[in-house]
Image (cartoon, rainbow, N blue to C red):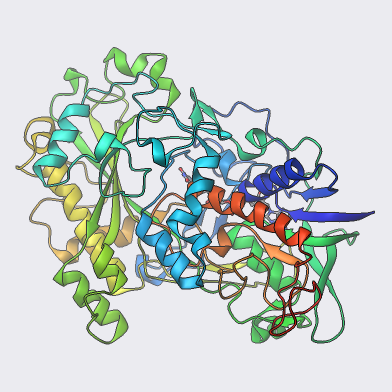
Length: 561
Ligand SMILES: Cc1cc2nc3c(=O)[nH]c(=O)nc-3n(C[C@H](O)[C@H](O)[C@H](O)COP(=O)(O)OP(=O)(O)OC[C@H]3O[C@@H](n4cnc5c(N)ncnc54)[C@H](O)[C@@H]3O)c2cc1C
């Protein structure tokens, strides 16, 4: 059997691409191979996190990270049909228009700008309210969205939290909607759930009609073709079985895709030689440009728990059926950190003073705050998560060995830049200002200072020094599980997602993001995969599965240098 498409990885991107290719052309023979099981039928709600670290998680760990007290950091990655969408938190954030536009500019192709991706963002979603930013939303997509308002969840501190942000200069976004291109401000907590139920990609993008192999690990892409003209002819499983296809699409995520490319002989020559892997295509940027978001948590004491402000109290709101439909939070708040301190940090990293049109100065570094009504069993605490959305640190994926069963070496280089450390410091100051400062109703009337973690002698206060905040962030930072960028568009793949210099091979997953999207990644990856499916079909019609070499035209056989 010669498959039209072999898609490796049945996670978010693999599910979207399989579904859309077959929907557009029902004659296609598509094979989808997934390392984990099919768990589509499992009702994994209400505890969204209960599958992290469990059967459906690759349960990866980074190497010790110098700038976070030399700690190795846990990295969850979905291992089942649906991939990350089976174990993730379901938070639905689009990110800011500005960073998508930088993506489009970086690769010189407007299809990857905000306006270029907007039709696909709309195509993905079934938004919950047709009167909010109608130009920006879709209503017939496969992924259903909900908010506290749409599910009748009114938490007790909603108005006070809104007022408190306003008191420190952070205003509500129009219609409390951060999924319309502008993220700076207060927005409703938006989740991809259908009345509480998880929207696993492989369940909502039906795989009917696709041949699906689960619990099956692909060990490498088979690369044939004469010297200098490598071409993907199929894949080999870890048990040695080979399967042939006209085109192979890697959708194994930003950790495993660079690993698979390298095990197939596509990657930096020196790295391949270290593991005695014959070089099929020397591509220096495979595994480089690794980026991830990190989170630093804090817990805050409630002055009068009896008043029922938090989860665990006797407040009936938290015991209602509606409460179980979503995460106990009202808002996602994004601030944009700018100014002289940021300019100095950029100068420290880049060795020269940045010009005023430096993208980071122009748009600011985005920082996200989420207050959850969690933290104790008796309603005596609420918690905050501070997430840096625009990190400039870049790490790498390299090989531990030439064996697919050995996890690759993950080195995210968290907080390696002066910019990242500065932005975190300022972000945490905002958190202390809203939760523990005298300027807000929350700080004055509801909360009673930080409940610092065990072993930490002093709490965060508005007087905390830079050194103290840095030490707390170093000790607490953890991954938000958003690896991206390790087979970056423009460097490893072209703007049609074709691996440069290798015929018949594409990457469609979070690896291709060339810039850091300031958001939880699903929206960006769904939109990218939706557009990818259309591009793949167009290329099929035009016989351009290879990148035409300069002067050779679209003949389907020429290879780019
Ligand atoms: C714990 C967690 C929480 C998250 N929370 C959020 C959130 O709240 N909001 C949000 O927007 N995003 C969130 N994300 C991120 C989001 O889920 C991912 O960005 C997204 O799933 C990436 O899609 P992908 O297609 O690149 O990879 P994945 O969805 O990870 O799919 C890759 C698939 O490839 C398979 N695979 C890997 N190697 C092989 C192999 N050799 N052979 C066969 N199959 C293989 C994997 O098993 C997996 O199923 C979270 C992720 C995690 C892990």
